Length: 221
Image (cartoon, rainbow, N blue to C red):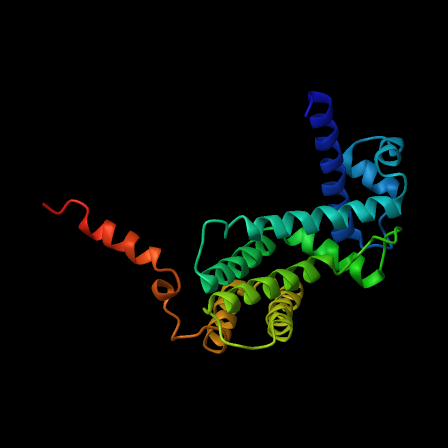
């Protein structure tokens, strides 16, 4: 990426962040390109250059929030192998990102409530759909390895996602809501119904036993 590309990306991100601030403060009805321009300290024409229109700007906000939220959650699980630990880490990271980026989530909810945005690709529920799809895939992978019980992964993923979003909705109205506590309770509730307590990872992957023995024997005279 060239320096020009980097500066262009930074400017787009700055305008998107300023749009989020205006949306949270003034709502969709009170958000205009002129107000965003004042917030960003740029000419209105600059916004039109990058985003074409207000609807195009809203679509960019939706895409940006979705990508940031999902990426933050997935980044925390890359090195985890245990199926349930991956789900637990995903939920914890997702909730932590939301808590630390309240304005982004509130802006997303403002846009979702009014279905603002101008393209056919504009999807106000994309963050939650991606969250649910990731959970379904993770549950299916756990079943394939034998770590999880047999159940309909779509139904369980929908239930888990719904429970997460219920907590976020309450938090949107009351910022004092303890999201971490709700996430811990959610995971404690679902774990017994999801995990197969009879699962033996060593039996499923014999090479793990060799690795364990190597680690145990290391340093033995």
